[in-house]
Image (tube, rainbow, N blue to C red; front, side, top):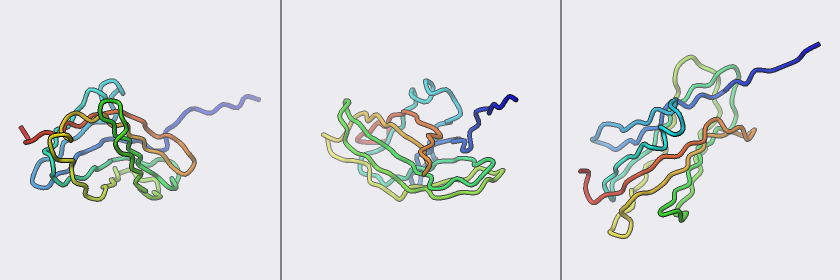
Length: 143
């Protein structure tokens, strides 16, 4: 008797958005290849308040303890690591979203520049639903 299981994703991470009040959300489509995602960079004006929104779908069964983990590096040096408890979610046919609490973008001449960000969407079972890289450019102004 043969027993095999097809790989399936219980959580499909659809998009990551940078949310700044008074501006259109900047969105990365996370259904693209990891190489395409890695090429994406957001620009953020120093000192502004921003949030990150993650859009995802849960299939088949309840997912317990979803977490969003983000490691930020500047010139390959770790500068920040944060873990957001997203929660437990039941399967739905619609996209569900998680919005991080507001944060202040770094400010000051020394804080400007490009930050490389490693993101991970995981759960209590240590399943890595998606691991991806993207970057954030902190500038004196939006332009």
